[in-house]
Structures are given as C-alpha cells and as structure tokens.
Image 1 (cartoon, chains in turn green, cyan):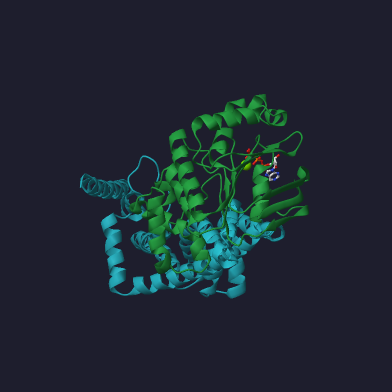
Image 2 (image 1 turned 30 degrees about the vertical axis):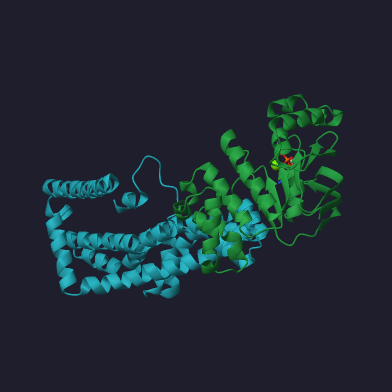
Length: 246
Length: 271
Ligand SMILES: Nc1ncnc2c1ncn2[C@@H]1O[C@H](COP(=O)(O)OP(=O)(O)OP(=O)(O)O)[C@@H](O)[C@H]1O
Ligand SMILES: [Mg+2]
C-alpha cells in the first residue's frame, strides 16, 4: 500500500497543496490527472522520497520503487545498455549477471540489441523513452511511478508504449501511479482515476473504472470519460483552457 | 563500404589542408626573409639547420627537458589545486564567496609581475619559472572546475537517487563526467599557457632551459638560433597536446554530440 496522509507541501515559500490524502491499493494502476501546475509531479516526488512534506506523512509498504520521468533523464556519457543497467549496477550487481536480462528486456521493449551500444544522443526520442522504461522495469520494482512518460511522443508510438507498459505492469503484478494530461489515456490504462485541480487546490474527485486496464473497448472508454466529465468538479478541473488536451 | 571510402577521403583531405596551411606559413616566412635579410628574419632552412645542430650536440634535449619539467610540473600542480579548489567552491556557496576574490586578484596580476616576485623569493633557480606557471594557470583550471560544478544536473542526480545509487556512485557516474567535460578544455588552455610562461620566466630568471638559451641567442644577436628555439617550443607544445591530452580527451568524451554537418569528430581533430 502507498498512502499520503494529510500531506502539505510548500516550495520557495509558496504553498502547493495542503492536507492531501490518497491511498493506493496493492496491484492497482492509478492515474493522476489535472491541469498544469496543480501539483501532480510534486505528489509523485513525495512518494519517491525526492521532496519532503512539510507536514503529514507518507506510508509506503513497497520495498523497491522505480520511476520514469517526463524526460528520459539518461546519462549522456553512458551507452544505452549501461543506462538501462544503472539501477542494477547501483545495487551492486555485476555486469556478467545482468547482461542477459538487459538484452531480453530490450527486445521486449522493441529495441534492437545494436542500439544498446549507442550513446543517448544517437537514439531517437522514442528509443530513449524505451531505455528509460527499461531502466525502471529491469530492477523488478514492486511500485512504478510514471510522470507523463510518453507525452513527448507522437500518437502512434505513444499508444504502442502504453500497451507495452500496461502489459508489463499486469504481467508482473505491479502497482503503478501514472500522471497524464489526457483523460482518454487515463481511462484506457488505469483502475482508478484521481482528478486534481488548482482552484480549489488538491484532489477533487476519484473515479473507479469498470473492466480491466488495457482490455476496454474504445466505445466504453469514451462513454465513461463522458460520464466523468459530466461531474461538475471534474468539468471545472478540465475547464475551458484545458479542453484541447482531451 | 562507401562510408569507409568517404572517411579515408575526408582524412586525406584534412591532412592535405593542414599541409597547405603549413606550407603557406613557411612561404610567408621565406618571403619575409627575402625582403628583410638574414639578420631580421633568417631563412626557415637556416633555423631548422640550427635546431638540428642543437639536437646533435645535446643542448636541445637538456634545455627542452628543463623547460618541460617546469612547464608540465607547474601545470600538474595548478591543475590539481585549481581543479580541487574549484570543485569545492562550485559545491559550496560559502567557499565560492571566499575564494572568488582571491582568484580575481590572481587573474589581475600580470605574469611578468609574478616573475619579478618569484625572482625575489626563489632567485635564479628552476623554482622561479615553476612558481610563475603555477600561479598564472591556477585561475584557469579553477574557473573550469567552478563552471563544471555549478552546472551539475540536479535532475540526473534525482534520477540516480531514486535508483538508490550511493554517494560515491553519484559522484563517479553522474557528476564527474560532467565536470571533466568542463575541465579538459581548461587544462588544455592552462598547458598552452604554461609553456609560454615557463619560457618567459626562464628568459629573465634562469641560466638553463629554452628561455635561457633564447636570452643567450639575443645577447649574441643570433636570430637563427632564436627562431630555432621558438620552433622547438611550439613543437613541444603540439607534441604534448596532440600525443597526451587530445587522445585522453577523445577517450573520455566519445559520448559527445558531434558538430552538426561535419565528418566524425575524430577526423575533425586529426586536422
Ligand atoms: N522546483 C520548484 N521550486 C518551486 N516551486 C515549484 C518547483 N517545482 C514546481 N513548483 C511549483 O509547484 C506547483 C506544482 O508543480 P508540479 O510540477 O507539481 O505541477 P504538475 O501538476 O506536475 O504540472 P504539469 O502538468 O505542468 O507537469 C507549481 O505551481 C509550480 O510553480
Ligand atoms: Mg509535472
């Protein structure tokens, strides 16, 4: 279980949110949606232990979290294969032991084995995101934190990587928190959708999706998003300036 | 296959370009000689002949090794101190505030003033050029280290922390490569300056080394010998930079993005 309990945070003297509580159950995929600047990334950073809350507490049963950032954040001076192995190397594992695993995962992620010998600047944007995803998956995490990992990609590639990710998450029985701007994307791949807003600040709505992530029919997805947008607080969060994102 | 042929062609083209440049330089020198005569500008052939003579009688080797020890020794000390202090200053605002004025003062003092001071402190010994080299190149390596440390990527560090990297690993894998990419150019600049300053200090302060030999040549109004020693200094500088620093840099920076619209970086550097 992962739970934020009455968490308040301010950065540079400005309050970002106060008294937020959210609980994420074992094996669930949860989407965080909401307008830009409402604090989604901040919430995830607290879970990852990169930001300390001013008050409140974080409860985390997971031993082995991994994160994929909005940008790939690869080390430019390391080859793709070594970047993918960063988490393993940091845990003191030896190259000979994980070499095979890296190769197998790279193939699953649709990377060519030759790409593993390239430096990040020699890869395409989509390939870099795959490497970043591989770096998170290869440590066999029990919790996956994803901050808009595919927002920089074109629609086709995005959907392909989403499907790939959902499959990996369900195959491995992971728990995942997934930030997105896109309600349709959230409805497609998650169990629970959590809507955040800026005015009022914080979590304004939680929605339990029916069916199984990754196996929903397009029509059901659109219907459910339509129902969700009929809820006044959700409609306000996705107000006029955000309709283009839907 | 086509790539390989193209690579070879580009390589020969770049070597040829360098040769043309060198040839042009020697031609200018020769023209100057024809216009101004032996005393002002001796013929390139004469200067090279004198250099060969110095190499034969052993004086070139001993003078060059004296100068090299001072230049490279001083460079090594300044590289070490400047880089270490620079990294510390880059990491801590307080240290930066304390050290910066010192470095500004060091930068403001002309090398010639240091030579005078060093002469008073160390007399006509090898310590005078070495000390001058150290104090004049410390600000350069310091500035490189501060710049490299201040531009460290917090986001990459966060990434490393999430994957439970130890502090040592974060330093070695995340911070050091970035700092080195700033330090290498600074080191190359400092080394180039180290030779010039060493020769200048020797000219005024010591009785051995290339600078001292140039002073003797000047007293004897021997322009050919002076030119021969200049060729020797430039040759040494190029040798150290291209045989030691460049290969080292190339090995540690294979990850760098290549300049757009040009051949591979290795070919560019061979020019
Ligand atoms: N490093 C920082 N220092 C100070 N304030 C910050 C910092 N990062 C973010 N903030 C502030 O925190 C608030 C929430 O930012 P956050 O990045 O969590 O938003 P977000 O919901 O992830 O937005 P987006 O969808 O655009 O990524 C913003 O108002 C922003 O100005
Ligand atoms: Mg964000």
